[in-house]
Every structure is written in structure tokens, then in C-alpha cells.
Amino acid sequence: MISFACKKIELSQLIKCSFGMNKTEFNVMMYMLGKEEMRVEEIAQGMTLERSTVQKAIKNLVEKSIVHRSQENLEKGGYLFRYLIKDKPVIKRMVLESVDTWQRKVVDEINRW
Image 1 (cartoon, one colour):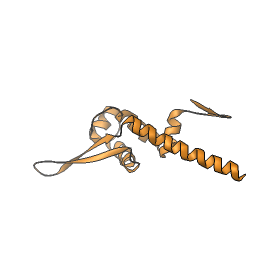
Image 2 (cartoon, helix red, strand yellow):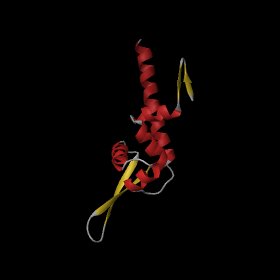
Image 3 (cartoon, helix red, strand yellow):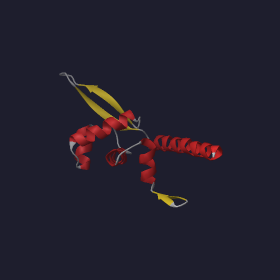
Image 4 (spheres, helix red, strand yellow):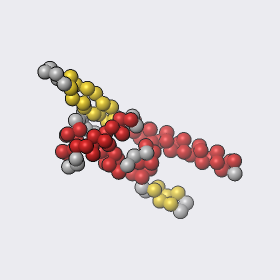
């Protein structure tokens, strides 16, 4: 937990805020950390969530550049999408960059005051 003056901030809140994530997206991200490529169905089954819920969360995580989507073409036609989360150190760096940007904005606001 991080304490800032009169406010305590859980690390999970800081991460969610850094990426503009909701609770489901955060939980899917945490579930995927350290795992190999997965399909939406595998994630949904592992987390006991509806496929559509996971699909929406994954779509948003891809848009936030936290998860990478790859396409596997099937021999008999069609394709499967597989998803791989970035390594934890990369995600940490992204959070730190977000916090650093916020900190610079705070300093600028205080200096303008």
C-alpha cells in the first residue's frame, strides 16, 4: 500500500488507474501473468467467467498494449486467436512511466500555483 498525505492507495488501484482498467481487466491481466499463449475460452474456463466477459476484457487489454493477439490459421479453414500478456517487467515499466508522467504534471501544477 502506498500512502500519500491523507490517502492510501492499493497497488492494484494504482495499476488499474495507470491503464484505465476496470476490475475484470485487472483480474484477467493478473490471471494471464506468467502463462503461455491462451485462447479466450481457456481464460474464461480457468477464471470461471463468461466467454463474452473475458473477450471484452481481452479486447481492451490488447488496445492498451498489455496483451498481444496472434492468429493461427487452421488447415481446414478458419482461424483461432491466441493471446499473450507482456512480461511483468515490461508492464511494471509501463506503470512506472504512467506514474512518472503524473508526477511531472503534479510538479507543473504546483509550480504554476
